Image (cartoon, rainbow over all chains, first blue to last red; front, top):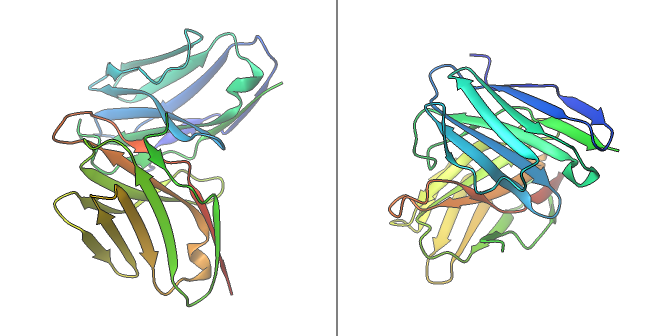
Length: 115
Length: 114
């Protein structure tokens, strides 16, 4: 299995621009998680989906952030407009069922830099 | 408010010695705890976990200890190897209370010197 795939691996953009991060979970996994990693706060859960339905989006920082999962094999995290404080590494993870205590499999991350 | 805290940003140990990474939590509803390991430019990978019904879980060189009364857990690596150099995250969740998500700490960077 290829594991969780994220694209792009690196994104550099200017403040105010729209940014779209993409994730392909492991086939057969029905839970998908978006995290943000910063030095100060470590790994923060932004949102998670179960069977393509958003279950908990309480970690989404602002209305500028939105996430979708149109099907079982694809999810996007969009930031519009982006700001310098959004600079971080964004991870996508998937797990086999809807209990998040199960092992989560992480993608390699997207390093976002907003200038 | 950080519900899971790793107060040591970094730790350096000599190869062959013991590495002890610590983690504290505040939410008494947490009943399942995990450690993840992260190498540069890669995503975190699951290392070991422990349920609150246990106070110790061992897997090879890795042992996790849980002290529920102190709301504290620790990861012991014995003996430490240079390949163990990575960032270690502890995470917690509440299965019985159905909080439904992992809460991660800030991470501790471990350096094992040859």
